[in-house]
Image 1: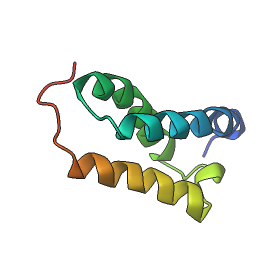
Image 2 (image 1 turned 135 degrees about the horizontal axis):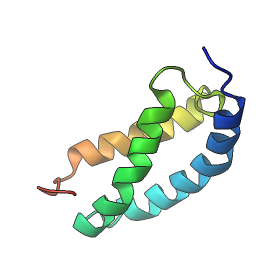
Image 3 (image 1 turned 45 degrees about the horizontal axis):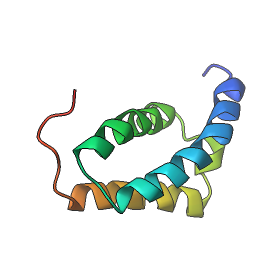
Length: 82
């Protein structure tokens, strides 16, 4: 596998901000927030696609992301997001 050090550095710098933003948006989840959440969740998906980043290997960080997905799955989804 290619060297992921640059990607891991970006993930470590950006994901904590994503987590704060998601936490704030989840309390008022609606269609407008779905447009903001979609690229964040795509970044998460793409970062774990082949290998789990070091920052997500800790239980607390991974558990928080899994909880975000659980809340989304339990929420009423918007019908269309471009």
